[in-house]
Length: 176
Image 1 (cartoon, rainbow, N blue to C red):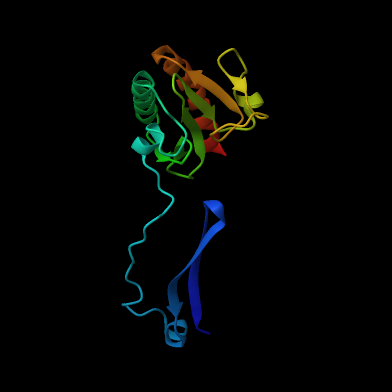
Image 2 (cartoon, rainbow, N blue to C red):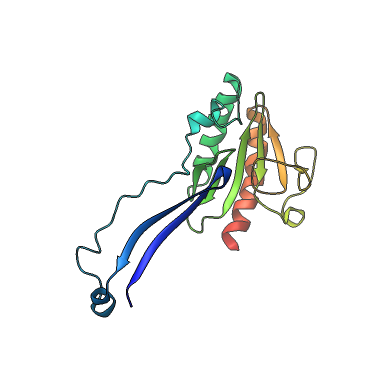
């Protein structure tokens, strides 16, 4: 049977697009795809966000001071240097760090004017992270990020305090 393939995308304000991305003819279904049919097409993702636009408040979040921007880039650099198997992904309301291996979210950064809210992407933190003055439970608070536990990064000393906690989440996510 011939098959028609469509990609359906939903965006803000209930906008939906339907794009026809391919069709399998009776001949292809019976004998396999032709060489012409297997050529890849360039695809543009509409949900990609710019780090610079995020930091300059284009998406109505962020609004970082120059000092906080500098701290953000230092934190991002330290995370990427410390964990080779993760990659940054800019989202509309936060920057996330995801495993290259299994796409698990490790932590997210929400940049405010004078601080960075680092959310540990874990919901079972009671077993992994110990709550302290540095880590707070944000499960019942609206946040931009993924997870239930968060630290505020206000200076370079906070970056160093956060790295062992990020490692605990990273190690847990790589095992599960």
